[in-house]
Image 1 (cartoon, rainbow, N blue to C red):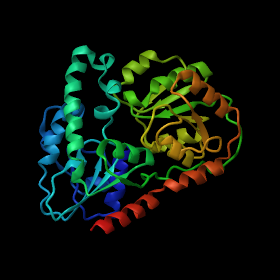
Image 2: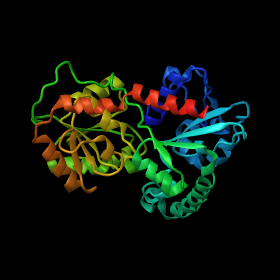
Image 3: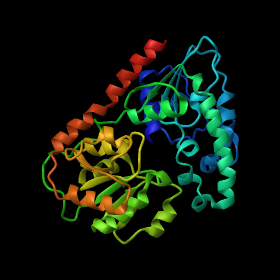
Length: 355
């Protein structure tokens, strides 16, 4: 599961009598904790090939989210990166929105998703109109939530900019009990035949292409965990020392974190759970010094922050990280600040205050 689903899982554990509503649900794609609640789905669920083509139906999401009948509820908690914040509720109900981020593709990263090199010139023209309309709807419905909670101060700034609303910050949950170091924490310089690691959905804004080129320049093998629409293009652009591992179990990912020389975060993230998981395993991180990484990575203590999103800058950051000694115990302690228990307690306090 990705970060949004892990947020939902934690909320379902804390509030097991809740009902779950979602635009689309693919059975087996989420944990038993969520499955047990039998998520209610929208009409998008019944559209052709929705499991594979759900992104195509994005223009229908506003209509779908507004058609949920929530009249019997007094308290609604939404987790939103797209349109869940815009549910329609009764006047008596309170609505707390845990906002993963205002939708990137409609506001400030249109070209990364719908530029001519992605969907062609004609596609860009069409999608620019669609996204402009979606952005207006997103802005106009920002008042439907009574309170916003953001996953980072970076996202709180985005909420202020695009929605003109203030937000409390509660960092998302990271399973620091599961993601843990190997039996012994040994401080030793990175190097030898160890590898750099990327764990990511293979979509444009993640900038996995930058990590591939940086590792080529640094002469460091790269392992890539994850899948997505960018995978064919990335494989064509890769070199011999890049291994695409596809989707892997949590146990496999934990083992890869533990053995990696560095874990890379080449894109600008709203929070970035992967760097925290890596740090929970005692592994240093090389991350772009923007967005959520500024809140999760301590420069020169738990990793290296890179000033600009270029392959050369990242190659330099990889070299610096692999030539120094990091203290795995310190890295681990820092990651423990982002535990599931902390998230659950902070969110429960906010939800209780709204009830």
